[in-house]
Length: 88
Image (cartoon, rainbow, N blue to C red; front, top):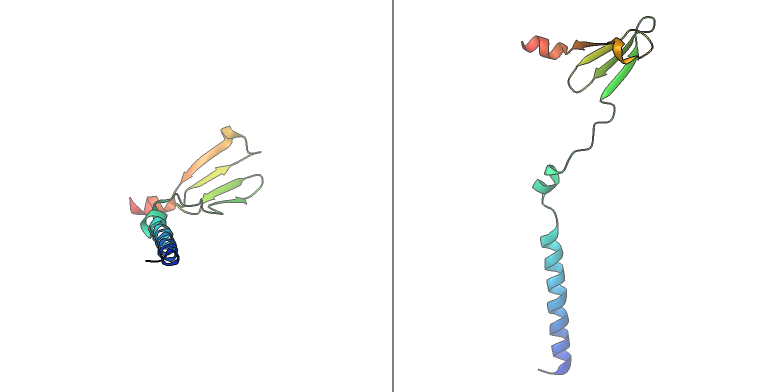
């Protein structure tokens, strides 16, 4: 085997190893599904009721909370989830 043929065979082997390494190092679909999902944009919806009443709704679970005045922590009321009440 000539010197030129040795270089070509060596280069082909290196390129083949690189291509094989790139193909084997790609994450599988199962690995991609295991990754933490991005938080849902718009999951919590905020709306104003009568007067100063504020309503917060979790659009994923249906859980609701209300606040009767100025958003102070002591004025929040847990209204529960209509979806849970139907199941029970």
